[in-house]
Image (cartoon, rainbow, N blue to C red; front, side, top):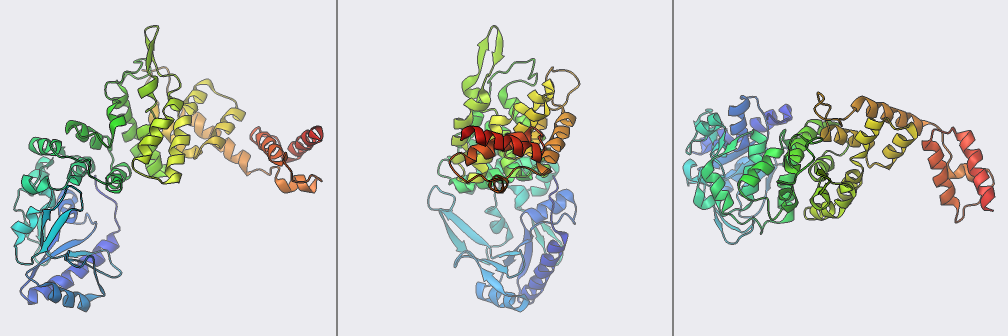
Length: 459
C-alpha cells in the first residue's frame, strides 16, 4: 500500500539532507537515508516520498551539531541518543548507535552512540531486513547488508538479528503492523521468534499507537490480527478478538463463517470507507468490536444459531476492551453508542421503516453518517446469497430526510419563554416533547401549539 504524503515536504527535507551530506563529506563523513524512505522508494518508485530519516557516519556529535547550525536551527532529542532535528522541518538526523536491553519494557535500553561502527553494524539494530536498507544521500548507492532487497522482491518480513530482535517486545506488534501495511508475509522463523516473546510488559500507549496506525493507515487491518493469531499473540492485549475464533453464526445470514471471519471482513470493508467517516479511528474501533456481544449471547435455539441482543450484551465487554488502550471519552462514547445501534440501520432498511423511526435512529447516533457506513461494512449488498443485506440507497435517502428535517425551524426554549412560560422543573420535559415533534416532521408553528397545550395540562 503506497502511503499518502506531502511531496513538497519530502523534497524540502531531502534538500536539507543533501546539504548536511555535502558538509559531512568535506570532513570525511558519509550520510545515508535509512528506514521506510529507502524501502518505499524501492517498492513504489523513487518518488514514493515519506518521512526523511538520515544517519550520519564518521562525524563526531559536536562536529555534526556545528554542521546543523550551518543549515538551520538544530534540535536535539535526548542528551545521549544521538538524534537531532532541524527547526521547521520533519527530518530526523541520527548518529549510529548500539542498544542493549536493560529490562523487559520497550524503553528499557542502554544506548551507545558511535559514529564509527560502520553501516553493517548500524543496520544490525534494525528490526527487519527491509528496514535495514541504507542509501547514500549523495551517490544514491544502496547498501543491503542483510538481504532486504531480496525480501522486498519476495514480499517477506524477516528479522535482521534474532538476538537483538527479542530485546524489544514492541517488535511483535510492529511485525504484524508492517505485514498489514506492506501486504507482506512473515518469514516462518520470524513468526516463531515473535511467538516466543513476552508482550505483557508493553505500555498501553505503545500498544494503542501500533493499533491506531493499523486501523487508520492500512488497507487490510485484518492482516494485523491474522498475523498475531499466527504468532499466538492475540493475548494478552486482544483476548476478546481471540474469543471470536470458532464462534459460530447462522450460516443463512453469515455464509462467510465464524464471528472471527466476519469481523475480519468487516474490518477490511470499513477500512475502505473510513475516509468518509467523521471519526475514522473510532469508526474502525467500532468495526473491530461491534460483535463482541456474541461472545456471551450466542446460543442454539431449535437447531438454529442466534445471538439475540448481542448489540446490548456486548457493551460492557467493548468498554473493557477500549479502556485497556485509552481513556479518551469521545472514542469510548462513540463506540458504545454506535455498537448498540449497529443492527438497526439494516433492519430498518429491510422493513422500510417510517421516516419518524429512521429520524429517531439517526438522532440517537453519535454520527448518523458513520452509522450508515458501518451498516454497509457489516452487511454489504450481495448477489442474493443471503436474505438480509444492506440497502444503502434507502439509508442515505433517509439520512437526507433527517438532515432536511433538522435544518427546519424548531421550537426552542426562548419560544416557550416568549409564549409566557417560565423555566421550571417541567421545562426540560416540554423541550423533549418539542424535539419528538421535530423528529416527526411537525412544523414549528404546529409543534409550538402542541407543546403549549401540554404545558397547560401540566398546570
